[in-house]
Amino acid sequence: MKKLTLLIALACLSIGLQARINATYLVAPQLKSSSDIVADDLRNYDFIYLFSAVPAWVAEDFDLPQEEINKKYVDDFNYPNPELIEEFISTVHKVGGKVLCSFQGTEFINIASSEERSSKFARMMALFARKYDYDGIELDWEHTITEELHLNFMQKIRAELTALSGGNRRYWLTTALHSYRNYTKEQAEQLCQCTDWINIMFYDMGGGVWGTVATHNCPLDQMKEAFTQQWKYFPAEKLHVGLASYGFYYKGIKPGEEVPEGKTLKDFGRYCQYTELPGRLADGWTEVWDDKAQCAYFVSPDGNEFMTLETERSMDAKLSWLKAAGFGGVFWWEYSYDRIKPTKAGERGKHLITDYVTKAIKN
Image 1 (spheres, rainbow, N blue to C red):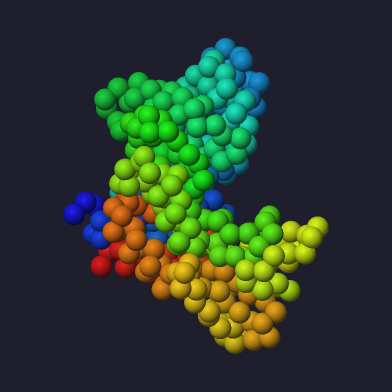
Image 2 (cartoon, one colour; image 1 turned 120 degrees about the horizontal axis):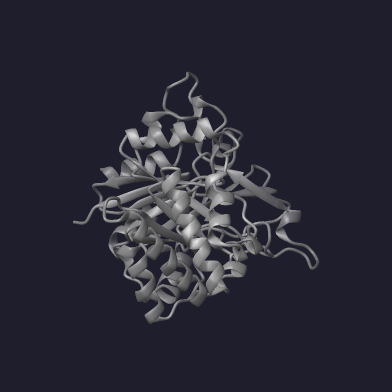
């Protein structure tokens, strides 16, 4: 059986698993003090994606000479909390993990649509990763993306990382994509060649707070359909499936109900974290299982409120599918949403749902 890798985002942390799935966790950094950096909490994962720790870039700057770009975005770059970031990366390396810096943005279209800008940006990214001791790069281009430009951009980043390594160090390259993207067979083959794996965001598949129908966040039936349709040209082992330790809370609307005309779900709901669930259950909320979606709603005693969140049962169903299909792994958004912080400095925090999945995969 092939090895399973687990990734988490606080980065994104990854762990090698005996159950033979690569599991990935994604997290935005919640680093406020050294007490948030616990080696025993980090050693569970092989890879960590560090978000919000790269330069805030301006597309027009990449019309400048490469030397000026490198000086501004690499040589003169300063973290808001450099000692904390450096301690975090050092701790991950000490426990045997890897840290990838995640470049995100809505304006990548203004970089990728220009051959000159995209080449300069790719060079800057590689130099940034080397200078600040990252083990690789993730491109998180979620909006305005076109498949052709995305592929071209990824190929340039890979070329720069390969040139930079000189055969002495392995730099990893991954990308995060929405589940509804659609690549041709040729594009899929080329994207697989230049990436180590691809993270598919199989969450936010319901109404969220932007749509019109209050439905599940991560319904397994829709995940399976998207994989069969949109990702049919990709080998499953090259894909990491996105899961969520967050969900959505709604009030004044029923599961599966459409909002009145002129309204959106933002008028009825909000994001919620998994850490909210134990308190709701203690207040008498009940679980309602949806056999088609293979996940649950949690409903208030008066039936006027409900939440859509993952459970151990829904995770078991997803893991069974992951293993049967032969996926390379899973990743999570995000690290803090199900975490109970330790009461004493240096102790490991507890993750209510991701710890369960990690244990299930290992065993």
